[in-house]
Length: 141
Image (cartoon, rainbow, N blue to C red):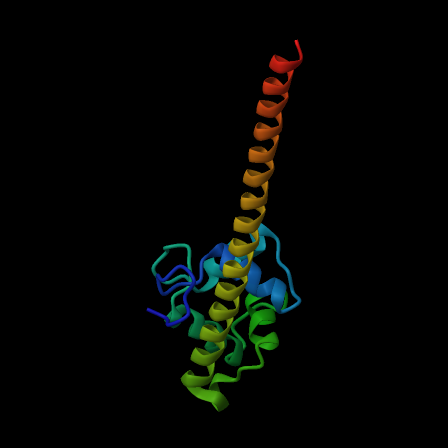
């Protein structure tokens, strides 16, 4: 598996690809993302393995991708030329992107946890205030 794979499954799935394309400044539609994966998905599992990811760069270098293909955009924006950089360059890019996605996901999870904690504390305060008002009303009658 890839060292920085946020899902720890060795693949880039649809949502990870969506985030990757957004971070590269070339957001895609849901259908566009599915088509990107479909173009190189050799095992038809709906996600990109490292081998399939490399295939993007090989197809781009061989001129086998359509001009409007999201994969061609990905290959251009990644600034990786497999013929020059080799497999290692593409692997580094792949892992760096997955690491960035993983970091973003962890950050979002931390923010969500903090928000949930604040909500819980606010609910607790409301409950204590209500209990106090009830107790107070019992003494004032």
